[in-house]
Length: 208
Length: 132
Image (cartoon, rainbow over all chains, first blue to last red; front, top):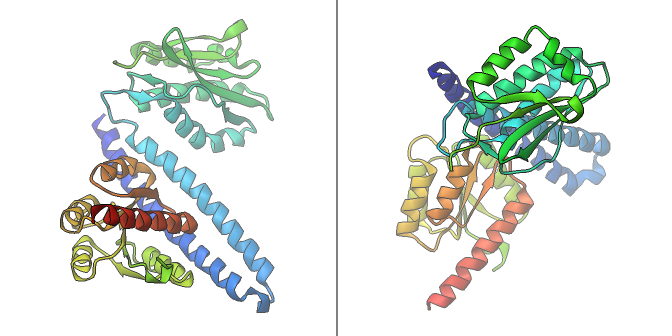
């Protein structure tokens, strides 16, 4: 726990630095755009230059999204009296796991579900459990498949659903026993989704 | 008020970022002074009160929120726009409580920044005329 908090502090500081770097790149790109707009007519490569600046801006946006997700991760081990926001935890996890999943040609999609749902768990615990489900289930999925994650409310509890055809077969995976043990220790229920498909994690309620 | 008459103070320890921002504002006819730390910001406000101060929250030395607090005490008519990162939204909200006009996340959209500067200057003008 202490080591996670320490690593979190280091990472949070580094993500602030990354944001400053990206902000500087964006301003410099913006300045070039401004100058091009002022005297671009005489510049033979104006269009290629503009295209290059467009790519630069896109990559800055990509970097910002990544640093935002990393920054969330950095603070995820911290305990707060209000508990963790489930949507925020899932947004960060899905954003950071997308690349790994796409190596196996699986696309992770976070559905726009209910917002504002909280749990008494720390964000890192929520992310760890859903991460374990992904570790168990992703190798089973056929290439080109889509795994849909959604956050919903069921019976007053926040639940995370993972839906894809055949995803429930993860219960036969070697890592599933460890996942069940961790879930139980965190008072998280794990069951099959509607019609026996997919996986549903029911998270403990946040303190009022 | 015409944009060329605006008095803008930019405060950030990220030299390249803030000087480039000043250059981009200048291309749009807005002159901005630049300082790189909280101490210099307090001095700059005391020497020549700006209409708007764009102030980074996370700086070494005197932190942005402390600069904000001190400026709002000594020069309450100065409107402050805070710059925050994604992980420091809480600072932005705390800054609003301390009297900041608004807060923005880095990286900035320059058009949005100019719009906010204009709103801040309009607000200060209205507040001054109500006070008279």
